[in-house]
Length: 163
Image (cartoon, rainbow, N blue to C red; front, side, top):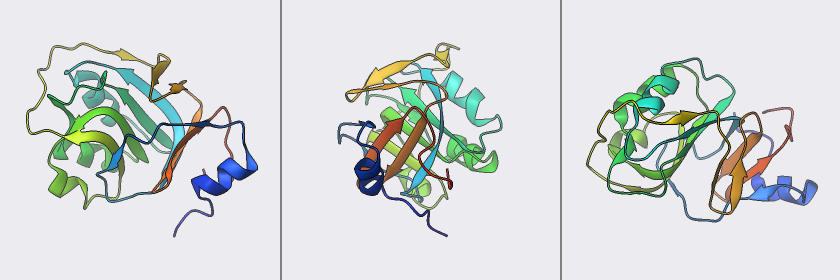
């Protein structure tokens, strides 16, 4: 069942939304996703991403600020499979992913800057649930993210009943 919204329709009805600059590529099997924002700021270390996807994610979207680095992938097949198992709607990654041949077959929204084959070093670094800013938008924990093939928008409150 497809949601009853599109980002263009939401922008028309709610011109106050923030529109994310169009830098992201769809890598997941779900190209439409939405939910409450959970944030993590990390640089070439996906330790906090690993912790978060292992937690209950129903109705939530993980926004990962990897500082735009595409040298190391912040998400791969195993973490994406864990995100699906725990109900996450999707991830928006300001960085890279890997195992794209698996990601595209999972019922998970994944938007990232690029694919990169190298995994991260696990150093236990990163900040969770802090406001992050990239692609012209501030992502605040608890706000709402809507993504589809048209783009990504952020709102301070739910814009639809299907979110």
